[in-house]
Length: 469
Image 1 (cartoon, rainbow, N blue to C red):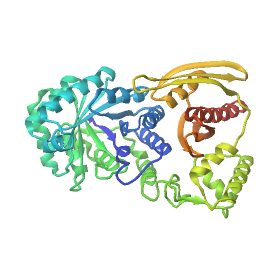
Image 2: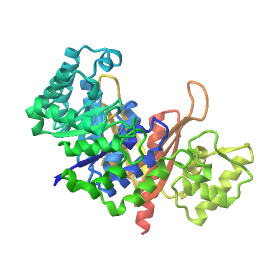
Image 3: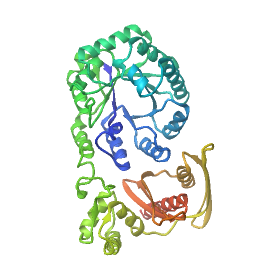
Image 4: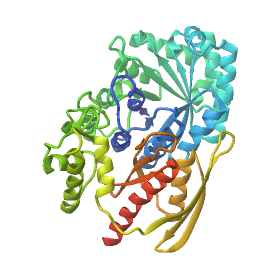
């Protein structure tokens, strides 16, 4: 039987009805990897610094699944995305382009000839960097057949190894979708040399049926979602192919024995009102309307701290509660984000193995960000120089180079604590090591300096605890 690759698009849906925190996206990727999903699709880069860190962290957390990130139709986006993704064990770059007249004209304002040129150049640029390149033909079922064939042929010639056809409108029945695929195979012999993928919208509640029909018609990759919002359902597709795979000559690598449990975990994480810890009423802990008050006792505060991912000793829990009380008595409410800062400031204060000596960071719109960091490790100077996707990323990478250790960046928070041009910036960095979260806090008029101090604060806590073990 033919192996069908299963691709999960859950994280691409986060703007369509639910939101996941930085930490939850990493946890979701780990669950999908454990389930045996072949491909995990991430959102593209919008905010260069934040999104690059997100992609790098997820790529580092995934062991077996491929990680795919879309690029925009320009060379700068290709380079920027690859810089964030290249450390993944199995990276994939995706080139998404509309192929229907309505989307080309009204969404991208491109004529067919210009769109073909953009596809050719972008796919070629991706292929020069990454061996696994996918061309996604958006709205393929409403395209002109001749142009769709041209676009697919162009992408294959430029180096795409996977061609994905999207029924964006979701108006096709399984038999229609089967004929659509068969006709394209007949018209394009080159399609036999690449993997054909499909993405089906669930407008008519037919996404699962169309996806399975596509597998029977020759498709080798199906886009699904563990928490579907208008797309094929990962769990349903996996069970259908496990039960009826022989009928369509197809099978998947999904671990069906773990499917129910992991699917429930993902659903709980994503469901509106349940995607954040129930301690805060089922709403994001980053929601400014969610607060603790002076009336909350140490048990409630400790539970809130655990919800943020920390595992504190009894001694540190008392320190955090005392610090919380001193703030709560002067104010009506304390937010979950502020509780993060309290933990970073009050919990697990340890001797500083690493201290900042000097740092020089250069950045601009025509040069790559470079950081030269000099630390004192138990009084002995150590230094490192690296290039990153922005000044903060470069600084953190320089510290990693000095220490020789990479820790998962669980969260990065930045806020002003005073007003005016000389405002003080406060940064909280949360690092994950051995399943535990360690946070550090830094304050400075220099945002980069605040970030470095916060990172070192968290790093020193990890080093201290590891030395104690």
